[in-house]
Length: 216
Image (cartoon, one colour):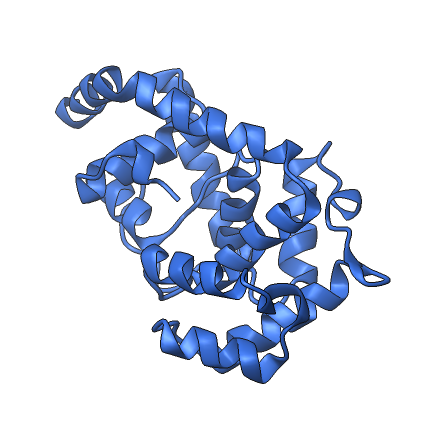
């Protein structure tokens, strides 16, 4: 299959960069609670919003509002930075802050059962407003626990369609549909002898012709 051969050649040329970026994500698991929570907020912000805009908004929130700001103050920052559904996402951030706070401190790490990433993903998708399976997978990848999880955004799905791993673009992704596609992608990754995280990074880079170090 020409597409697969092309993909393997592309991987060979980017292997070191992919390994380096995934190692950087891996090291995040040792970051303090505040950093882990900030990654969660980033993943709440990204749906239907560019990563660069989400990153800019998050950086501004980290100047004092992320842990102390009101819903209104947070919404204003999100709106200013072009975050879609800024009012809704501000509410999600406040709810997440309440969920992961103990006293006046964020204690997110002690609440995450990282021994079971797939179970943790399901828990996050059920308990954190604004996180579906895609966003929860994204968050876990970004903090070093997503090696075997698929991040099925529209860019990745477009690449899967080209590779004939899926026959059509899904109109929506229910939990069952997400897991069905993830299973197909897992089998494809195994044939290539890659982890899902490695394959995701490769497909992401291939879709946008972007350098691996821009993966966020």
